[in-house]
Length: 547
Image 1 (cartoon, rainbow, N blue to C red):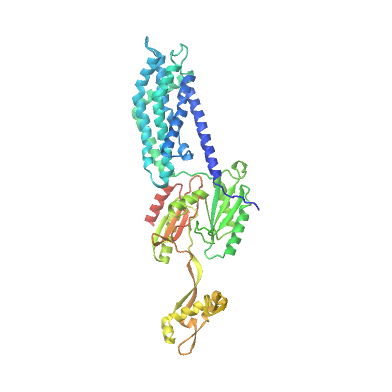
Image 2 (image 1 turned 135 degrees about the vertical axis):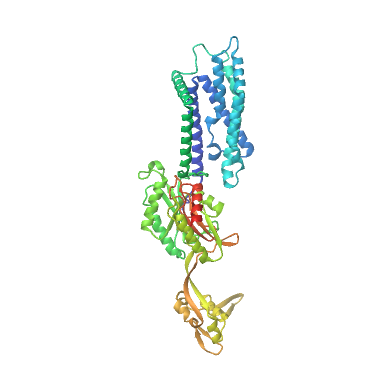
């Protein structure tokens, strides 16, 4: 035997760390090259670029103080361009003053005078940038947990860069240019001079035609603001976990044997895709009740091969669309939804719904909830960007309902208890005796054959003895019928509930990302949201008000 883990979150963590390392290294190299090109002086570029590692060191100290770990959210948002802004201003003005030294003014005095000239505007500029991140520090819930580390890291890095720009840069500049600039050394190259001259000419034209310039800017601003109506917005980022979790929901009341058979067919279809390395399906609830799923529900883990080996698809969303289309065409009657393992757990932990958006309806009557759910489903289906609208099926399980007729019972001198005892005898049996074997004791029960539990006609033929000695069949004193009852009764805050839960259909998982969620209470109407969570929720709200 061999134990093989089919899903390991360490794979996601290792990939995230690699991404952080790659971004930080490439960002440092890119900023250093840009500094050299535009400063035009190797010593000046090296001094300015040295701000980056020292600022990162200060940010690490801040992360240690606030108990923040190094991860994608805390380090992935650091912009080295912002970090070196103050140092660039300080270095540029220092070199400019060194080029235009007055009389007997030493290089150190020129650097000191240059620092005094820019200290106030440079400080205010950096402080303004830092203040932009302050509202993020007051976010609550999952948003606060995800974005507060980023804000703290960036703020400490910017504060460290400001401190270093005011102290370390002038000090290193005085050492590097202690004798001033050599007569033939200039910081501006020929192409930069031409670029500056072109900018000066364009600036002169813009100032002369200032009315036209302002009008054009207003028009461009209006077009940009108008385009926001057609552009999706998203607050929470989506992390590519490298795997796909497909949820399958069969009809309620399906037997375990049939559910396993359908799942095997699904697995066979999925293994036809060469992009999928392995398929693992879980059905029902595990021994530890961490997931409240019935035998009609299942989680299917799709472990993918490296994307570099793919030949038919260029992205995950293309693969998801193909899988969804193939399964719906070959295995109908099953609802499919796509998400990622950790993303699904987070959504379910936050709201109890395996989706980003949810419309919950609370009430007591199942029929009313179902009717309102159908109306919500119809309204949401017409929202721009919604696709594959579905409703969680929580009813439809066949159940045998026996309703006593009190009038007929009274006519024969029977009561409801007589009917209940007859039904109990057919189902679980009546204890009629007890067998004692030494210290062991066994109860003996008598019950009707199994067909009375599966055949409504047989159940109707059960005979009851009236007080007067008459033999009365069950169908004479009760109505026996097969109805469709609730498959599950879920509650939230003490009430039955119904949830309409559209999920995100952003650019990463267009129209396929977590198609349908299971509500934490009652029934769910589930579908992918529009291109964003925020824009999708506003459009769904408008649709419900209008409908």
